[in-house]
Length: 298
Image (cartoon, rainbow, N blue to C red; front, side):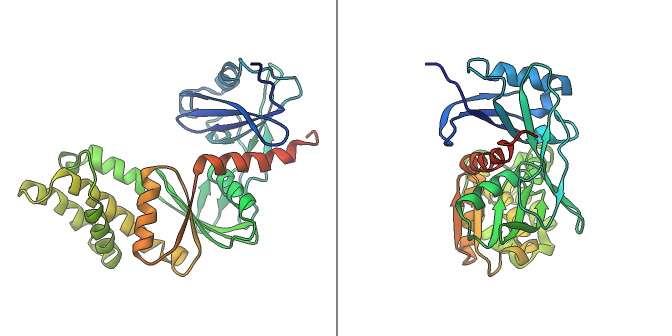
């Protein structure tokens, strides 16, 4: 069957590329994925990579393509400028240089001057969430390698804070002495205990991390407990630092992974009700909202 998109939505991250063929009413006609993320491409290789991915679709010369993610970074196809908070998410669109007739516009990121912070890609998911939850006022948590806590009000991003918790977990579990302790499997009870320990005494984080290794050496912790405890201590320390964001707030989590589940469990254990949403759906809804800006030629 021939796929002739009215427009094309693209999510181009560091590691992967996803595209959706969209009908005029927002229906997904087809989708395609590629491992050619931003990190694997030189600037001149972005257009060929996208062209190859959508080659099976019948793309008219005036078909609009809207992209979000790291494709708009300094190392991407075109640098899409940041908009500073307070601001509505996913508002700025930058046209990418093309030679083969494609019309590609890239969503800009969001930045904050004090304390200094940036996001690129998450703003599109936030836009999608707000498109579906127009009256939401509270905090959106986006778990990941660099987890974002975002305060939104009246349809705008008011402030946000990024935690490198996911990256720290990866470094400790793969490149530190703790790599000898962690393994497959996960103990939810050990995770909850570790979150509570870190929340109540975040200043003891470094000592508690080494205790994971020590407990393994004296035969007290299997790898399932060690992995869960490492995750719980790091997320608990993050929750201690981000308390002003989630305490007494409406909280939504955008995510589809096990990591999103862990954040939800950790918050619910603190008595915080959480709304869980699907990251892919929020991305697509945000791209739809941005596409509406392209209906008039730039």
